[in-house]
Image (cartoon, rainbow, N blue to C red; front, side, top):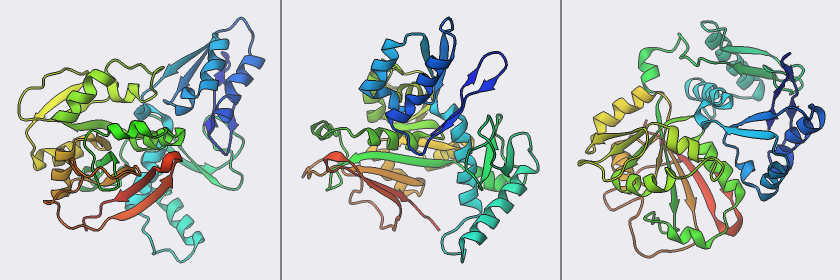
Length: 348
């Protein structure tokens, strides 16, 4: 976890870098600020929808220290997501499994790519040796740090054709062992591991828009539109992000920043990926997801599999699903027996 609060009119940076991101580490910065800043000052913190704030002990600490004011920002606007976008581009454009004989070659290729990407836009991307922790550097001795500042722009060396391919559709589903994803009420029978919240936050991190089918939209709208950041760190992303809905007839509910795209049209969704130029988050929406899998529009599958067999219900992969080989990107287990499986969907 990297925290760099700026204190006072002189812009002094009080930084701290920790190896882990638990609630114990999260509280170090506000405690430090409370100790060292004049008691007459109100202190304002901008949080990147951190799931750590949902910890009971964290909320209790802030309740006992009311001069620290919290402000939540959409995850997509956080500087760390801009950094992640750079590394996603690096991975997509330059790095491939099995082509580097050693770590030195991998590092050399990465630095060469980033140097090239930095040349047209030195104001937003630099590659430099890491030094003391500050506004633009990571405290990692001997490593190289990549710093990104607004506005984020596409490097000039990427062709328009490549830029059009940069939008990605990320599908997030709660599923049973037999693949049922319809109305996962059974999830309430299992403890919600805080690390699951962090994992879901990582899925939406870098996403610029939300794509939903009619049924899921009409379930989500009344629930999410009433939630605040204090109640759920994901609320700003769900409420503030542009939302696109696949439905052939008018919607029965309203939700801020929602656009009706009409009935399913693969060509229209390809254009949406090009227009968004970043991650597009999809949750639930089984009919829509199956159609997009068929039409090779899904780029990533993030499945949270619960240790239960439903026996009936709408499945993620129906009888009409075409055969496909997926690439496992990550696997993580949580309390209660839930497993997260992250797959990349290759179409080449």
